[in-house]
Image (cartoon, rainbow, N blue to C red; front, top):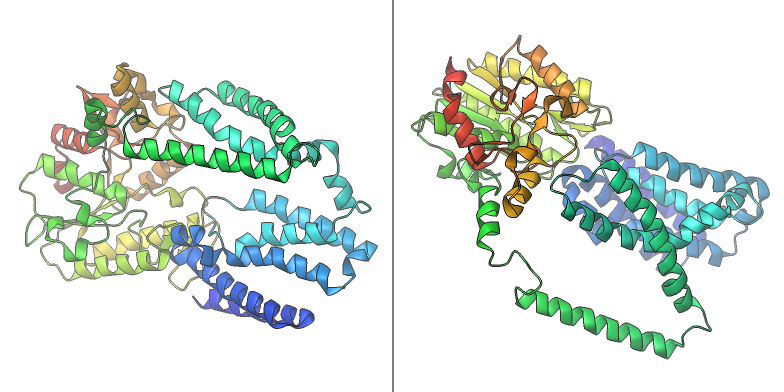
Length: 504
């Protein structure tokens, strides 16, 4: 993590230098806390991104930037009055936010150094934009002001409106429906701004006493509704519903041999079917589902399952967004490789994952802490190296390509909803052409890898002549967008003798 440490140290020096301008113990304490928070966020966005995203300790530095703006105006400095600087820095602030919108993706480590784009951008706008410079005039344009006025109402309205639409459709609502909802959201947001927000903000609308009384009454009402919903099934149509309970159980998370095989496989006998395993099942949640394919086709199989969600079986790198943490993922894969080398009975290493990082251009973290934003080429190189190391250990690598997805719909949700409302399950079937573009590229890469190792295609079991089945004979294959259900794994493994495909 040397790169992160150098970057964080420079940030710390900058913040302490900033503190000297404003003097005083309060500013020093705030900036010291902000510095620690930033370093924690920057490292945590890679090591433990989920906890870091939601933790106040790793987001406090963002609030401190707003405090810095307040300190600036209290300091008596007049840098913002310089016409040239205010123009340049105000436009820079807008540019940073726009660039962040385009640059930051779901694969980008966040929050951390990349969060500096929107936060510093906002700071520059607050401090340097005014009615007389270019950035201030841009932000004063009527369409921009209008969006700003209704933005909070739109934020509150769009979620329930879209949720209701999705509830009415078994599959994802058509694009024209979602576009119509977006347009309707703008109109409803304007109504609530004009007749709810604006009157409350007006000095002549309500007195402070009236606002506090209405707020108190509203809060009490919502608390009462919450208590009723929490303590009874009145507000939950699924509570005590046998049909829902049955479908939810059928589509529960597929952990393979046992739930203990999620991260704890080193210490659990439940992840081992025999003392001298012949097969090592290695990968993430997409490997967990392969366990059923194997055990259903050979109940007495000798197998050990080594799996961690979002931790692909590739040595020396990890997805930056791994919920397990990139560093921990890399170390866990090293342990699996060591265990494989030290277990002579293992003949076959079954490797499974969605392998999306091979093709989507997402960020990866290397063993030394280096972050590569477009990591597909490096990831592919490391994947090939992993296969080579498995072969060098005298084992036979077997790659399992992930089940085909439908880019338009969550297949598992479609099956669940169809079961609940009595709709035809065949309505969840889809064309092979609906495969997402990224997965198509992954398949192409795995096809090339088949020259170096055996590749097994679940798609060959679920798709025929360009049409893909989501279920068959009442068996629900998928549990979500891409994972197989327990019953799906068992059905397909037994029907197509998956074990035989591995060893032959």
